[in-house]
Length: 126
Image (cartoon, rainbow, N blue to C red):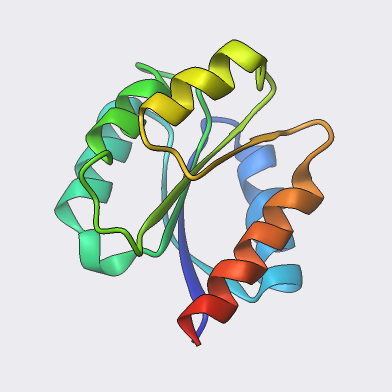
């Protein structure tokens, strides 16, 4: 079974590259995307049965990824939420942990870690 990912990222180039990478290397399928906090929150909370992993950037066209993370806090345990950001500082990692995030990855140097995380989630579902 393919891992169903939802991406909250406002940069179309990053979003398209991420989808291509995760589909090719991790066997994932993108089930949707949002560019704003409100759209991300609405989709992820209204369609909880349609996704396995949400990948959230912190800085969006409208609002913040932190709001998306807070909205996903009460998700079922099998639904995973990760942050992919250029600002993966120690403070941000701590704040994300407080919001129940499963992992934080730096866009500049931790994409391999994200791919590995996706592979682990895929095998856990099999």
